[in-house]
Length: 377
Image (cartoon, rainbow, N blue to C red; front, top):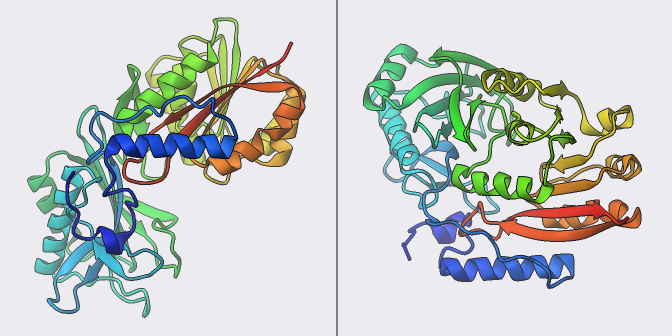
């Protein structure tokens, strides 16, 4: 067990003092309660539960006592910030980059953004790290019109961390809890990095969805496809497809795959990823999943769902039941919405065949859960 000096203030790791194997047992028991069944598979856990986050958000602040700039996260149920440069679940490289950004901001006299007054420049940092290559995408979020000495700032960072392959300047002057603003400009590099999952390469942009824990994501997707049992005659619908990770992995076995995602940038990445991986038995649409499925007239054999925490809409689930695919694999980071969402399928004659939790979020109560449903014949 490792010691975190700010765990009591931060609140991000509720299970920081719980042995990892015990955490997995607790999560399995919680899933049994939520799904009201003992038939929940053991949680697929990590080999090493530390420093697994390859996707990191941090805010900047000044220590009122020392006047030192630090990178941190919001204290639980508060707008106060807690230093996170030594976080035990963040990738160690991200911690080092955040520390260096703070030192550069001090030496270049870059003002820290003040949420109360709306004044200042440096607001947040958003870091993504490729597991396959260790390449870094760095998003600097500012609350002003520009970043002073931006060239020197970029040069200093890239010189110290050659792993940084692209730096993006994001503009967020809104009084909101949203980290990223709408407008951004690439300061260095191509504006994206690539990662590999299941032998395929994926382009990751600043605003496209990609799981925080790439090692366990590979376990998650491999298990999901194993549950789906996709054949070369199957047509697959991947709702909430993001940058096309599951879609393209499925396309290696399927006859045809349709991916739907509301984020246009993610769909651009998905199309580029399909082309790059030479998987042309795919098509991607930038659309709301509910609106798309209402007008869909293609027979699908397998449907894969991987929505945000809010889950799928009731009209989507009712229409899905009407379309009557052979198999549905529902992946969710929120089992409460998941168990509600699958009710229309159960009423339409689907049965839960398997419930498999995967731990992507060690030291927290959160768990990713896969449910396989198939039509009773």
